[in-house]
Length: 240
Image (cartoon, rainbow, N blue to C red):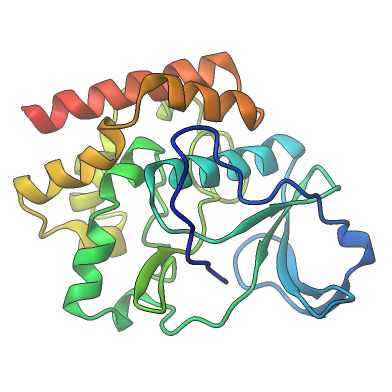
C-alpha cells in the first residue's frame, strides 16, 4: 500500500482532497496488494493510485471516514481520495522506505506505538496487519497503511455489529490478544505512561470536532455519539 505524509490536521472536519476521481478514466497498470479486489491505476498526468473495490458504498464511506478521523487525531495514514464510483476508495501512491512491521527499528516501533489510542478508539483491529504488513515508513515517519478495518466494518466488509460498541476494550486487546499476534508484538511492551500518552491523542479532541468530522464525511448521528462515548470510555480506562 502507498502512504503519505499528512499535513497538520485542522481542528475539525479535515478533508484530504475534495475532488472526486473518475476511476473509469484511469489505466490499470497493476494488481491488488491486499485482501480486497483492487488494482494500481494511472491517470493521464502520470499520477498513480491504488483503487479498492469494496463490498458496498457504506463500506467505502466507512473507510473514508476512518481516514478522516485518523487525520483529525494527527495519525499518519495513506492520503485517501474519493471516487465517483460510490463503492470504491483510492489512495495516492508513493514508494515506501519500509513496508513491514519486522523492518521497523526500535525508534520507529516507539513512533508507531504513539497511535495505539487512535487504533483503539476507531476499533481498528487490523492496526498492525494480519501479517504485520499494515505499518510502513516514509521519510522517517511511520504510517498506518490501511484503515479499512476501522469503525463499523471489518477489512473485508463484514459489519462488526455489537462488537463495535461504546466500550474501548481494544486498548487492552491490541496489546495482549493471542489471536492478533502482530498487534501484540507492536504494542505489547508499552507501559502505563506510554498508553496514557497514546490515548491523549484522542482524549484531547473536542467532542464537537468529532461530531463535525463525522457529519461532514457522511457518518450518522449515532456513529458520532458512539465515537464521543468511546472517547470518554478510553479516558476512563487510562485514568484507572
